[in-house]
Amino acid sequence: MCKNQHIQTGFTLVELIMVIVITGILAGMVSIFIKAPIEQYIGIANRAEMTDIADTALRRMGRDIRTAVPNSVRLPVATGSSYIEFLPTKTGGRYRASSDGTDTLCASALGNSEGDSLSLSQADSCFEITGPAITFASGDYIVVGSTQSDGNPPYDNVSTNGVLRAYTGAAGSQTTVKITAMQFPEFASLESQRFEVISGSDQAVTYACENVGGTTNGTGTLKRYSVYGFKLAQLAPASLGVSGTLLADKISACSISYNNINQRNGLVAISLTITRSGESISLYQQIHVNNAP
Image (cartoon, rainbow, N blue to C red):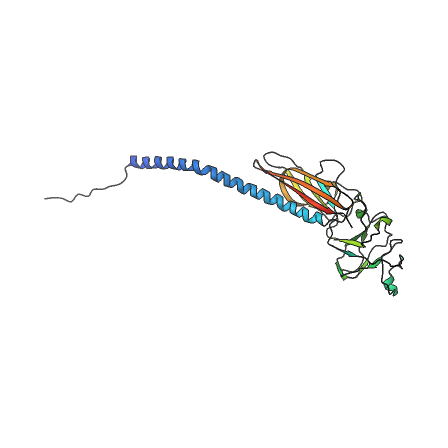
């Protein structure tokens, strides 16, 4: 008489240990091969992010500086500058000039058929725009005849040596400009009869690299300072009395230079290096500045 025998099959403990050991060896071999590509991918992603941050910051600076009032770009006298100041414009136009070289103050209000021209021989408080109307906001400023390359007259609205004047007219679309009555200097007279409008919500602007340094990780920042008024003499960012807007961090090197090539053109050069986790990227940008009013 035969009895049914049930044979049980499965892994022994030795076999299981062998499988685990072999799997570990294979995993270790695979990790050796994929370690380099993963590290490379992480490095590329890190450098791409740093490049994007630096590129965005430099593009922002470039857009701002290209709108600068002629001859308003200025840097500290010391070499190796890390900050730059200028007056960004939001729009501009042409003022009416008198055909006979004279002007009755606010002539349009007195019914002068010629229209109200801007007087440069005496204090004048209004003039007509020749061309499309311009939209003004409360607190805006205008600059007339910024022809001097020393960088100071566009910031001066308290003396007859300056070409900056506060807009005092109503907000909205205007064909007549009302300003603080003060005679403009002789050099403000222009054949082009151009004037620039500066936003009261921005005023003067300073870009500054601060606390720059570091090797493994950059310690510096790039900030934009605005709405601090107009300073006759350029001040360091720490003395402006306002908090800057952060544009980039981890900055290990920064250099800003300005070459006033001639009376009509200038060139701003900016070099920026960002360092993070031992990886560094450096970007260099040149920005053309039009100094012809």
